[in-house]
Length: 244
Length: 110
Image (tube, rainbow over all chains, first blue to last red; front, side, top):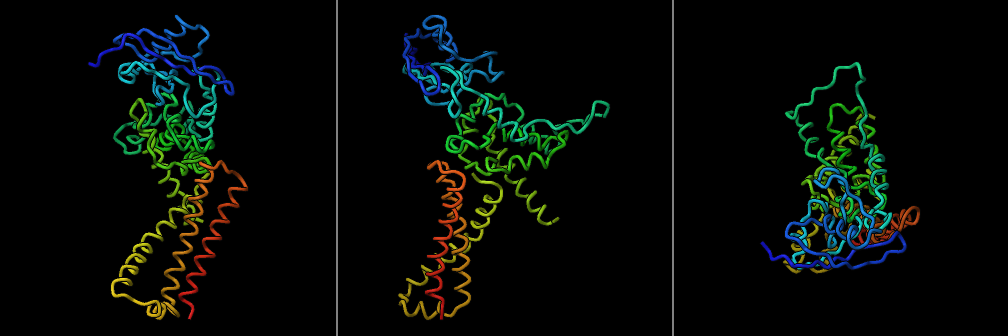
């Protein structure tokens, strides 16, 4: 185990959009300490006006993602001595999103894009109908299963350089969700999803750089999902041409 | 800034370019091996429908492919959008096609 420094020098981004500043805090270091613990210590012991967001503290809710030393991470599951062996921490709100205040990023654009990608369930059966049994033996279901553990933390969205350069791009999380629904036998709007991911901000903007898969804390692979969407949209387009 | 149509156009033009690039490189290597003179090269290309179609389709594919690729760079790195971006794409495509087809005609017209 690496030696733990006794103090941490933590630089935190403060303020709102247009009035960003950076403040440095001297924080005691412990052997077992997450980045979220550090942020909480600052808020409770040094500056109660610090705003940040968290809920479950165990990597389930996806609320506490922030930029840690320039890399998007879930702070509740990120140990300080794994990312800041030299005792230096730089914490900022998630990249590619507007800042509400301090470390709280505005997630609205992120979730608006889920809706724009038709990444919501389109029911195929009513309350009185038999439900479709879901077994992971079917290839389409197995493909959907690869992406359903997304916790909406926004880390892939913050990591994506295509989102940074192209604000219209729907982003990895929304597209991956659309892909899981496309492979879900219970979803009734296949054509709607394919149309939604084929627009000017759609899956075809992805440059396959793979930061989404690299930084996803749940080891999901949105890059694979987006490649699947590209394939299916192209197939559907050929089919439409043939049938026209 | 890429919808399905532009994406398909860029991928299909890439598909066309793959054999043409290989063919072009092969021709270049062949042409310099034996020391073909300009006159000898022109003697083979002028009046040849085959070379006109080969390099003509190359020019079309390059114009489409490069114009869409530069459109993406202009948007993501240059921040251009909307009509300006469309004009730029069509302008680049038209320029590449114009200079390319002039060159093709210069060596293939009898």
